[in-house]
Amino acid sequence: MPTLNLTEQAQQLRDLAHEFESLRARVRGVSYTPGTDALRQISPLLLKTQDLTATLLVRLGALANSPYTTVPGSHASLECLSALVIASTQAGNDLASALYANPLEGAAFPGYPAYSESDRVARHAEAIPLMTGHLADAVHQLDLSATGCHYVATGITRDLADIHDQAKSAQMDAGSPLSPAQYDALKALSLGQGKLQERSHRGLGVTRVATHDGTRISIATYRALAKHGLVTADTSTSLFHGQKITVTDRGQQALAQRRPAATSSTSTTAASKPPVVQGARR
Image (cartoon, rainbow, N blue to C red):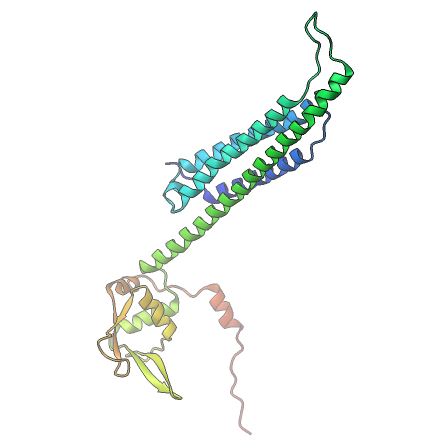
């Protein structure tokens, strides 16, 4: 399957939605006189509708023949685009029906009476409500087309966010990029004798991590490591006696990588803190 930039596809669908909205406004505001003037005013609207339908088919084909079909929820997006092809085609049909209802002037066959002025007025009076109805139907179908394109574009953007979150989670699960604090904590726990303990502080139970070399590890850092299977605690003993912490094979793999460098934001924050000066006692 060919590669596809889904971000670009989503933007193209939004652009297409704006074009449908613009065309809808043009159809809604079209002003005409039945006859040749109506043909001149409505024909470009029909041609534009057909052009947008063709573009919609290109967007549908690109997504249907790409790896996007493997993304959960993509089936609903493709079905929606298929339905929009019907809507935009129906809008073109409504405009064509308006042209069909439009009375055009022309000479009659030889031997047949020519149309009188009263006939012309009567034909116009009969055609106007029919044409108005067809144009209103076209506006409705164009509105559906625009809304549907926005809906699918939003769905693709949401799918991309989900894929990003899943990839980020999988990356962490695989033991790659830890923060410097997480790496140091993991290294300290790998020395052995690390324990998860609960101590009473002002009448409240406080859970803390104790290490063999005295490295300070916050409970939040420990929980992040445990969440991704890098460490595990022996729950067969109570927290009051201390649960032994073991670095898992996945944690050992993470330690085998180079220690991550501190980010620029972390360095900037540290540098921005003023030094602590101990004042002299008076």
